[in-house]
Length: 313
Image (cartoon, rainbow, N blue to C red; front, side, top):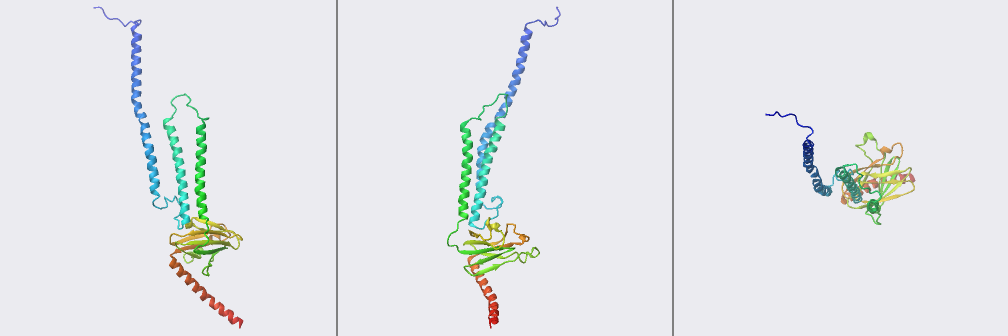
Protein backbone atom coordinates (compact mmCIF):
# COMPACT_ATOMS: atom_id res chain seq x y z
CA UNK A 1 0.00 0.00 0.00
CA UNK A 2 1.06 3.49 -0.81
CA UNK A 3 1.34 5.72 2.21
CA UNK A 4 -0.56 9.03 2.02
CA UNK A 5 1.70 11.96 1.87
CA UNK A 6 0.97 15.49 3.01
CA UNK A 7 -1.88 17.41 1.38
CA UNK A 8 -0.93 19.21 -1.74
CA UNK A 9 -1.07 22.90 -0.93
CA UNK A 10 -1.25 23.67 -4.59
CA UNK A 11 -4.64 21.89 -4.91
CA UNK A 12 -7.10 24.39 -6.40
CA UNK A 13 -9.89 22.87 -4.21
CA UNK A 14 -8.28 24.13 -0.99
CA UNK A 15 -9.05 27.89 -1.52
CA UNK A 16 -12.62 27.00 -2.43
CA UNK A 17 -12.96 24.93 0.73
CA UNK A 18 -11.54 27.81 2.83
CA UNK A 19 -14.04 30.22 1.28
CA UNK A 20 -16.90 27.88 2.11
CA UNK A 21 -15.77 27.64 5.74
CA UNK A 22 -15.43 31.44 5.97
CA UNK A 23 -18.86 31.92 4.38
CA UNK A 24 -20.38 29.47 6.86
CA UNK A 25 -18.80 31.32 9.81
CA UNK A 26 -20.07 34.69 8.56
CA UNK A 27 -23.52 33.24 7.91
CA UNK A 28 -23.77 31.76 11.39
CA UNK A 29 -22.62 35.03 12.95
CA UNK A 30 -25.16 37.01 10.91
CA UNK A 31 -27.90 34.55 11.84
CA UNK A 32 -27.11 34.90 15.51
CA UNK A 33 -27.20 38.68 15.23
CA UNK A 34 -30.55 38.53 13.43
CA UNK A 35 -31.91 36.20 16.08
CA UNK A 36 -30.91 38.75 18.74
CA UNK A 37 -32.61 41.65 16.95
CA UNK A 38 -36.26 40.76 17.42
CA UNK A 39 -35.90 41.29 21.17
CA UNK A 40 -34.50 44.78 20.53
CA UNK A 41 -37.01 45.52 17.81
CA UNK A 42 -39.81 44.22 20.00
CA UNK A 43 -39.19 47.12 22.39
CA UNK A 44 -40.56 49.62 19.92
CA UNK A 45 -44.09 48.17 19.62
CA UNK A 46 -44.26 47.76 23.37
CA UNK A 47 -43.37 51.41 23.95
CA UNK A 48 -45.80 52.49 21.27
CA UNK A 49 -48.56 50.61 23.07
CA UNK A 50 -47.62 51.76 26.56
CA UNK A 51 -47.01 55.46 25.84
CA UNK A 52 -50.67 56.40 25.09
CA UNK A 53 -51.83 54.36 28.08
CA UNK A 54 -49.38 56.14 30.37
CA UNK A 55 -50.62 59.53 29.14
CA UNK A 56 -54.26 58.54 29.70
CA UNK A 57 -53.51 57.22 33.20
CA UNK A 58 -51.64 60.44 34.03
CA UNK A 59 -54.55 62.61 32.86
CA UNK A 60 -57.06 60.51 34.79
CA UNK A 61 -54.89 60.70 37.90
CA UNK A 62 -54.66 64.48 37.55
CA UNK A 63 -58.42 64.78 37.13
CA UNK A 64 -59.24 62.52 40.05
CA UNK A 65 -56.90 64.32 42.43
CA UNK A 66 -58.81 67.53 41.77
CA UNK A 67 -61.90 65.99 43.40
CA UNK A 68 -60.45 66.34 46.90
CA UNK A 69 -58.90 69.53 48.19
CA UNK A 70 -55.67 68.93 50.08
CA UNK A 71 -52.28 70.58 50.39
CA UNK A 72 -51.03 68.20 47.70
CA UNK A 73 -53.80 68.88 45.18
CA UNK A 74 -53.55 72.61 45.89
CA UNK A 75 -49.82 72.34 45.10
CA UNK A 76 -48.72 74.03 48.32
CA UNK A 77 -51.35 76.78 48.41
CA UNK A 78 -53.28 77.32 51.69
CA UNK A 79 -56.91 76.27 51.90
CA UNK A 80 -58.91 79.27 50.63
CA UNK A 81 -61.77 80.65 52.74
CA UNK A 82 -63.19 83.00 50.08
CA UNK A 83 -64.73 82.60 46.66
CA UNK A 84 -61.95 84.75 45.23
CA UNK A 85 -59.33 82.49 46.84
CA UNK A 86 -60.87 79.46 45.14
CA UNK A 87 -60.49 81.19 41.78
CA UNK A 88 -56.80 81.78 42.53
CA UNK A 89 -56.25 78.11 43.45
CA UNK A 90 -57.96 77.01 40.23
CA UNK A 91 -55.72 79.32 38.19
CA UNK A 92 -52.65 78.03 40.05
CA UNK A 93 -53.61 74.41 39.40
CA UNK A 94 -54.38 75.09 35.73
CA UNK A 95 -50.98 76.72 35.25
CA UNK A 96 -49.29 73.66 36.72
CA UNK A 97 -51.31 71.31 34.51
CA UNK A 98 -50.30 73.31 31.43
CA UNK A 99 -46.65 73.28 32.51
CA UNK A 100 -46.72 69.53 33.16
CA UNK A 101 -48.37 68.91 29.78
CA UNK A 102 -45.59 70.83 28.04
CA UNK A 103 -43.02 68.96 30.12
CA UNK A 104 -44.50 65.57 29.20
CA UNK A 105 -44.39 66.44 25.49
CA UNK A 106 -40.79 67.64 25.71
CA UNK A 107 -39.65 64.68 27.82
CA UNK A 108 -41.50 62.28 25.52
CA UNK A 109 -39.76 63.70 22.46
CA UNK A 110 -36.39 63.46 24.19
CA UNK A 111 -36.97 59.81 25.17
CA UNK A 112 -38.27 59.03 21.68
CA UNK A 113 -35.14 60.48 20.11
CA UNK A 114 -32.84 58.67 22.55
CA UNK A 115 -34.48 55.26 22.00
CA UNK A 116 -35.48 55.23 18.35
CA UNK A 117 -33.02 57.62 16.74
CA UNK A 118 -29.69 56.55 18.12
CA UNK A 119 -26.69 56.81 15.89
CA UNK A 120 -26.56 53.68 13.72
CA UNK A 121 -24.09 54.79 11.10
CA UNK A 122 -21.96 57.68 10.01
CA UNK A 123 -24.62 58.76 7.53
CA UNK A 124 -26.00 62.22 8.30
CA UNK A 125 -29.76 62.05 9.08
CA UNK A 126 -32.21 64.28 7.20
CA UNK A 127 -31.94 67.89 8.30
CA UNK A 128 -35.03 70.02 9.01
CA UNK A 129 -33.49 73.34 9.95
CA UNK A 130 -35.30 75.04 7.08
CA UNK A 131 -38.54 73.06 7.37
CA UNK A 132 -41.20 75.80 7.19
CA UNK A 133 -44.12 73.79 8.65
CA UNK A 134 -42.07 72.81 11.71
CA UNK A 135 -40.89 76.39 12.23
CA UNK A 136 -44.46 77.68 11.99
CA UNK A 137 -45.58 74.98 14.44
CA UNK A 138 -43.09 75.80 17.19
CA UNK A 139 -43.84 79.51 16.72
CA UNK A 140 -47.63 79.31 16.82
CA UNK A 141 -48.02 76.71 19.58
CA UNK A 142 -46.16 78.77 22.27
CA UNK A 143 -48.12 81.85 21.20
CA UNK A 144 -51.41 79.97 21.67
CA UNK A 145 -50.29 78.70 25.08
CA UNK A 146 -49.34 82.19 26.28
CA UNK A 147 -52.61 83.60 24.94
CA UNK A 148 -54.66 80.97 26.82
CA UNK A 149 -52.81 81.59 30.09
CA UNK A 150 -53.19 85.35 29.61
CA UNK A 151 -56.93 84.99 29.05
CA UNK A 152 -57.55 82.99 32.24
CA UNK A 153 -55.26 85.26 34.26
CA UNK A 154 -57.03 88.42 33.07
CA UNK A 155 -60.44 86.83 33.66
CA UNK A 156 -59.65 85.87 37.26
CA UNK A 157 -57.91 89.18 37.96
CA UNK A 158 -61.00 91.10 36.85
CA UNK A 159 -63.17 88.88 39.04
CA UNK A 160 -60.94 89.39 42.09
CA UNK A 161 -60.86 93.18 41.60
CA UNK A 162 -64.63 93.51 41.18
CA UNK A 163 -66.31 95.95 43.58
CA UNK A 164 -70.10 95.44 43.52
CA UNK A 165 -71.93 98.61 44.64
CA UNK A 166 -73.77 97.10 47.62
CA UNK A 167 -71.63 94.83 49.80
CA UNK A 168 -73.16 93.22 52.87
CA UNK A 169 -70.46 94.51 55.22
CA UNK A 170 -67.98 97.37 54.89
CA UNK A 171 -64.76 97.41 56.92
CA UNK A 172 -62.39 100.37 57.08
CA UNK A 173 -58.87 99.06 57.74
CA UNK A 174 -56.31 101.58 58.95
CA UNK A 175 -52.66 100.62 59.25
CA UNK A 176 -50.30 102.50 61.52
CA UNK A 177 -46.96 101.81 63.19
CA UNK A 178 -47.35 99.11 64.40
CA UNK A 179 -50.89 97.77 64.52
CA UNK A 180 -54.35 97.98 62.93
CA UNK A 181 -57.70 99.64 63.39
CA UNK A 182 -60.91 98.02 62.10
CA UNK A 183 -64.05 100.10 61.74
CA UNK A 184 -67.54 98.96 60.77
CA UNK A 185 -69.19 102.21 59.61
CA UNK A 186 -72.58 100.55 59.10
CA UNK A 187 -72.73 99.67 62.81
CA UNK A 188 -70.57 102.34 64.44
CA UNK A 189 -68.16 99.73 65.80
CA UNK A 190 -64.40 100.18 66.05
CA UNK A 191 -61.55 97.86 67.09
CA UNK A 192 -58.14 99.39 67.81
CA UNK A 193 -55.06 97.24 68.27
CA UNK A 194 -51.56 97.71 69.62
CA UNK A 195 -48.26 95.98 68.78
CA UNK A 196 -48.09 92.31 69.70
CA UNK A 197 -45.56 91.38 72.36
CA UNK A 198 -43.95 88.10 71.22
CA UNK A 199 -43.62 86.97 74.84
CA UNK A 200 -47.39 87.37 75.37
CA UNK A 201 -48.59 86.22 71.96
CA UNK A 202 -50.85 83.51 73.43
CA UNK A 203 -52.83 86.05 75.46
CA UNK A 204 -52.90 88.78 72.79
CA UNK A 205 -52.32 87.75 69.14
CA UNK A 206 -53.39 91.18 67.90
CA UNK A 207 -56.69 92.92 67.17
CA UNK A 208 -59.44 90.64 65.90
CA UNK A 209 -61.33 91.26 62.68
CA UNK A 210 -64.72 89.52 62.87
CA UNK A 211 -66.53 88.71 59.60
CA UNK A 212 -69.76 86.88 58.74
CA UNK A 213 -69.68 83.73 56.65
CA UNK A 214 -71.35 83.66 53.25
CA UNK A 215 -71.58 87.44 52.92
CA UNK A 216 -69.74 89.93 50.75
CA UNK A 217 -67.26 92.13 52.63
CA UNK A 218 -65.58 95.19 51.17
CA UNK A 219 -62.31 96.39 52.68
CA UNK A 220 -61.28 100.05 52.42
CA UNK A 221 -57.59 100.34 53.23
CA UNK A 222 -55.90 103.46 54.67
CA UNK A 223 -52.44 104.21 56.10
CA UNK A 224 -51.57 106.94 58.58
CA UNK A 225 -47.78 107.01 58.30
CA UNK A 226 -45.85 104.64 56.00
CA UNK A 227 -46.65 101.94 53.46
CA UNK A 228 -48.09 98.76 54.94
CA UNK A 229 -49.67 95.67 53.36
CA UNK A 230 -52.86 93.96 54.53
CA UNK A 231 -52.34 90.21 54.16
CA UNK A 232 -54.49 87.29 55.24
CA UNK A 233 -52.85 84.08 53.94
CA UNK A 234 -56.20 82.25 53.99
CA UNK A 235 -57.54 84.87 51.56
CA UNK A 236 -54.65 84.01 49.17
CA UNK A 237 -54.47 87.75 48.64
CA UNK A 238 -52.77 90.88 49.92
CA UNK A 239 -53.08 94.54 49.05
CA UNK A 240 -50.82 97.49 49.84
CA UNK A 241 -51.95 100.12 52.34
CA UNK A 242 -50.54 103.44 51.13
CA UNK A 243 -50.76 106.89 52.79
CA UNK A 244 -53.06 109.33 50.97
CA UNK A 245 -54.09 106.62 48.52
CA UNK A 246 -57.03 104.46 49.64
CA UNK A 247 -57.13 100.92 48.31
CA UNK A 248 -60.09 98.58 48.10
CA UNK A 249 -60.91 94.92 47.58
CA UNK A 250 -63.83 92.61 48.22
CA UNK A 251 -64.27 88.97 49.26
CA UNK A 252 -67.08 86.52 49.92
CA UNK A 253 -66.25 84.26 52.85
CA UNK A 254 -66.96 80.52 52.60
CA UNK A 255 -65.63 78.95 55.83
CA UNK A 256 -65.70 79.66 59.54
CA UNK A 257 -62.68 79.67 61.82
CA UNK A 258 -59.86 81.86 63.10
CA UNK A 259 -57.04 82.77 60.75
CA UNK A 260 -53.80 84.74 60.99
CA UNK A 261 -53.15 88.09 59.38
CA UNK A 262 -50.15 90.36 59.27
CA UNK A 263 -48.46 93.27 57.57
CA UNK A 264 -46.33 91.96 54.70
CA UNK A 265 -44.51 95.20 53.91
CA UNK A 266 -41.42 96.13 55.94
CA UNK A 267 -42.70 99.22 57.75
CA UNK A 268 -40.22 99.93 60.50
CA UNK A 269 -38.58 98.63 63.65
CA UNK A 270 -41.54 96.66 65.02
CA UNK A 271 -42.94 95.45 61.72
CA UNK A 272 -42.91 91.85 62.98
CA UNK A 273 -45.34 92.80 65.77
CA UNK A 274 -47.98 94.17 63.38
CA UNK A 275 -50.23 91.11 63.62
CA UNK A 276 -53.98 90.51 63.76
CA UNK A 277 -56.47 87.66 63.52
CA UNK A 278 -59.53 87.13 61.34
CA UNK A 279 -62.51 85.30 62.83
CA UNK A 280 -65.22 84.17 60.45
CA UNK A 281 -68.52 83.33 62.18
CA UNK A 282 -72.11 82.69 61.18
CA UNK A 283 -74.26 85.77 60.36
CA UNK A 284 -76.22 85.33 63.60
CA UNK A 285 -73.01 85.23 65.66
CA UNK A 286 -71.72 88.27 63.79
CA UNK A 287 -74.84 90.26 64.73
CA UNK A 288 -74.44 89.18 68.36
CA UNK A 289 -70.82 90.32 68.32
CA UNK A 290 -71.82 93.67 66.79
CA UNK A 291 -74.47 94.16 69.50
CA UNK A 292 -71.97 93.32 72.25
CA UNK A 293 -69.38 95.74 70.84
CA UNK A 294 -71.97 98.51 70.57
CA UNK A 295 -73.02 97.97 74.17
CA UNK A 296 -69.39 97.99 75.34
CA UNK A 297 -68.67 101.21 73.46
CA UNK A 298 -71.78 102.89 74.94
CA UNK A 299 -70.76 101.79 78.42
CA UNK A 300 -67.24 103.15 77.91
CA UNK A 301 -68.60 106.43 76.57
CA UNK A 302 -70.90 107.15 79.58
CA UNK A 303 -68.14 107.97 82.13
CA UNK A 304 -66.45 110.23 79.63
CA UNK A 305 -69.72 112.02 78.95
CA UNK A 306 -70.42 112.41 82.69
CA UNK A 307 -66.92 113.78 83.31
CA UNK A 308 -67.38 116.23 80.48
CA UNK A 309 -70.75 117.33 81.90
CA UNK A 310 -69.29 117.73 85.40
CA UNK A 311 -66.42 119.79 84.09
CA UNK A 312 -68.81 122.06 82.24
CA UNK A 313 -70.74 122.73 85.47
